Length: 178
Image (cartoon, rainbow, N blue to C red; front, side):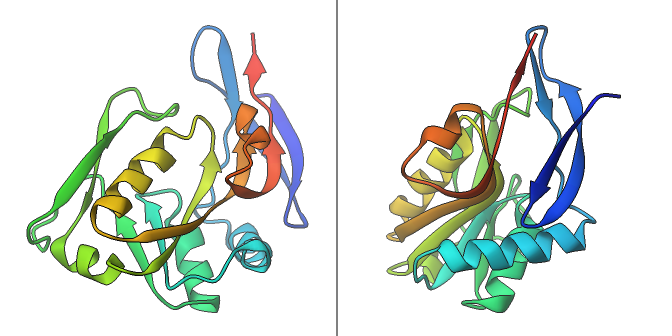
């Protein structure tokens, strides 16, 4: 398998090159199980991010990052879930189509999450921002509950996302066109 070598928050990694379509491959970045990168990336991002009251991420790959950033910072994070759970009272949702998923997904917040986010300064975090579709869906959800998005951060900005001026990121990640 081909790999893309890069340094992420001081950590050397080899990311596997994964096919997405007949014309596009991406470098697969997964923080799950990589405590060293998760801790280093969280610390580096916290140094760049604005003041905030709560961190929000989408289920699931951004969860370790959100947890670690909340642990060392505001101590409050919320996960927009991909499905309704039994404990979720009066959930609200938005739909999103991500580059790494082959179908439209929904992101949900419970009534308790909404109350936690209302009138708060919110930092959205994720592992990778590529097309920005997931990010836009989360923003829509947060605005609908009265949250104030003060920043959007990720570990890697993939493809054209590196040119965005509205996100904070640690490293650019190229797309691999065939």
